[in-house]
Length: 319
Image (cartoon, rainbow, N blue to C red; front, side, top):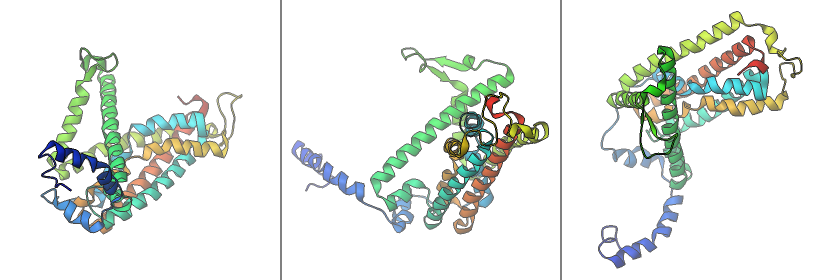
């Protein structure tokens, strides 16, 4: 068999090497790594060690910041109106419990292998490189698309706050189909700014994340307070339309579990904490507290927010 260096020396050598591709792919697809390789050989490829500056409260902040986002404001109303009714509170509790079980798995792997690879490294050790590749590719698409959507949403909210239409901040690109031919300048600037802060320093990005998370949680707590002080308990059992199903379980127990499947999307983000394991001062102590603590805190906040919404409005009036 020709070596890698001689595979391109001649056309014949290249074709011979190309014929070996299926065999090599099959061998690599099922090959698994080890914890020792991930901690030593794979980490050494980066050429530098990350600074260990993060503590458990930084991880809790990152976890909460990753989970609490636009999802909870979108899925709560739909899950309540179409699936669970006022019992959407239980839907969030069930989804939070499932997320906590998954968080335990991430915690175990992150403590055993405190590397920046996250789920990619865990799957490469457990199931092989092909499964890790598919997972890594999906995670990249998830992060890219979700961040792009959040950045576009920021432009819309920011324009509403200052009374300017967000369409004025978009550039039209010719020769592209309608609907895909506009660049949101503000969204691009926000993404570049956040990327610069993250790349500049983990410590500074942690501080910024804590500030933004605190601001976000302020709005969530505000909604909770307004709901419990201004709402009515009868909205938990009495719909606005007498013809609608009444009671705390208008759609039955099946609706609660269907709602849990929808609101689980609001918990996505805690897995990103495991990618910070290489920068944690004491992984054995800080990672379990950071990952599990963030999921528990967010679950409590989500349940309170769902309860406040159910107290403010009957479920059949929720938009």
